Length: 437
Ligand code: B12
Ligand code: SF4
Ligand code: SF4
Image (cartoon, rainbow, N blue to C red; front, side):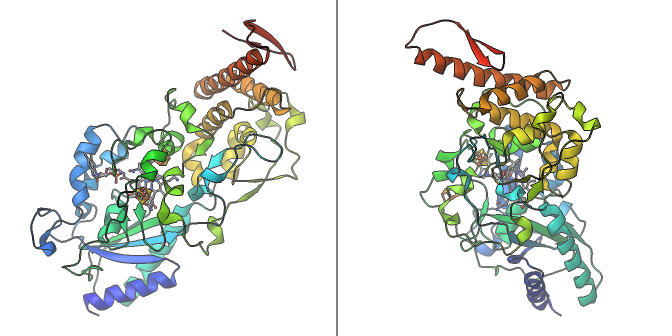
């Protein structure tokens, strides 16, 4: 097989394995030649990597230390002798509403959170990495010459979207996501770096797919935390996805109110993107929202402060919980053991139990739940219990949320009294005393 036949075979096998897209980008000596040369075949591929040192120097990576790995600035450094990078994409779009279309409480008026679409189903690393490794195994059977190959799904020091662009899979939008004109951006990427000489998917004189963002700037305008200092550039420290999943310490207080009901990730800058309006639905049920059978905590788990002393509020064991708009009280009440059991095969485990409970507290604080609703005293009690727990990170976020809810309640009670200003309102919320000012 020559290089062209190998690439054709690979793309066929990748499609047969369920990948929606597959392409090859060359990792030849020229990848960083000048972007200004007139001969397009000599222009640099992976040119976006030139900005990486500046992006890092601006501190945009926040606590994500792994983004400073020097190998990220040159994919050839990931595998000695690497000649090609095979890039795959799988559509994970499930036929469910967008975050921008969902109310922030359910039919029972109970406040609900938002888990990003990418995390509704099975952990995409577990779903995709074995498929890539199986493809490598097939390559070993098919290709006569010895070669090295390494597969990654988020897991290696390589910026996958840049590789995807130069493998012809799409363009990098102003929201920094890779967008394919037919599939949109609800895509999981995966890469195989290999020493094999494969024919690139783009001909030497062919530019990468055109940037079709045009004059649109919906994503930039819609971002609630203003995470884009300029188009195509994200300050990850402000992105809700970073704040809810990657950040291990306290969420900066000034950003908390803008996070709304997000508990894991954020979809807004993709929800508003016109290229996602006609995004096809994934055939993989694995990526559809999971239904989880709620279970009562075991005796030892009842030491978790959110559940301690309130057995009447435990779920019955018959109920199922969906990851589509999950009840915030359920998430905030999970014990560490329940979290580990429920999210063992889910991308949510990356946020860790402490992170999820912290995020659920912030979302409860933002829930604007009416003080007149039957849920209000229960939610405030839950936050009170968490505010008393030994975990200082959770306790601080729970206090913030309780104070935010109860001060909003007091303000609305004040205004209902026609502007009288009793500064302390004794509320009959199961004995809870709401202090103000
Ligand atoms: C770190 C990371 C994040 C971080 C940072 C995101 C980011 N934009 O970099 C956080 C946690 C915020 C995040 C969020 C999400 N992520 Co993420 N993430 C990654 C990861 C692991 C590394 C990406 C990376 O290296 N970023 C570092 C910076 C340097 O990259 P960059 O934004 O591309 O920065 C370049 C531009 O700014 C450019 N640039 C252009 N012009 C200019 C001008 C100037 C002046 C400067 C300074 C820079 C600059 O240069 C920079 C360097 O090249 C990749 C997997 C991988 N290994 O690639 C997944 C990945 C990018 N994430 C993915 C997903 C699905 C998500 C979320 C949708 C999850 C969610 N729903 O919450 C969101 C999407 C948010 C968004 N709008 O991008 C997918 C994206 C698929 C797609 N269609 O693009 C990936 C590829 C994972 C995968 N295998 O599928 N993610
Ligand atoms: S994912 Fe959400 S917070 Fe992050 S950049 Fe997009 S809109 Fe902003
Ligand atoms: S919303 Fe508009 S500007 Fe943003 S990525 Fe989509 S097309 Fe580009």
